[in-house]
Length: 124
Image (cartoon, rainbow, N blue to C red; front, side, top):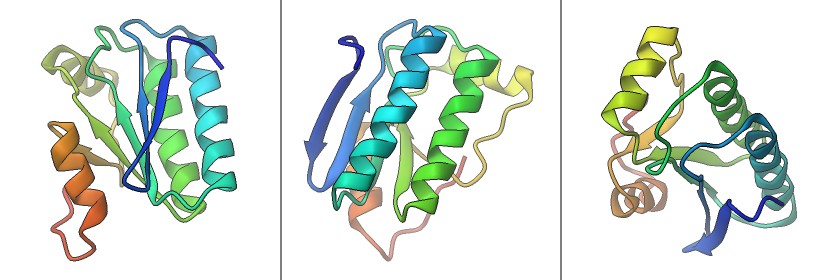
């Protein structure tokens, strides 16, 4: 796995932190690793921390959405955390939507979303 990707298990959730400017191979490794860990564990979901990501390209955005869909098919949920305004603007300009992916401003809120089954769901 790419050493720039931080992966931590926290409260039954897989927390993945992306580096500032992930290239296509890093994003592909992220997807593969997240799915392998979901398969081998009883984690409820994935929190993808993109707060360090400064730029967004179509491959990164598409892979994040696809990964969230795959995690969902495996019985988990994905929460994207820490999206910078510039990244949100670029995603919107590229025409990307997050579909059924949950979003949160910070890690605490993301953990709360995944921990509370009666929560009001905020979708991207």
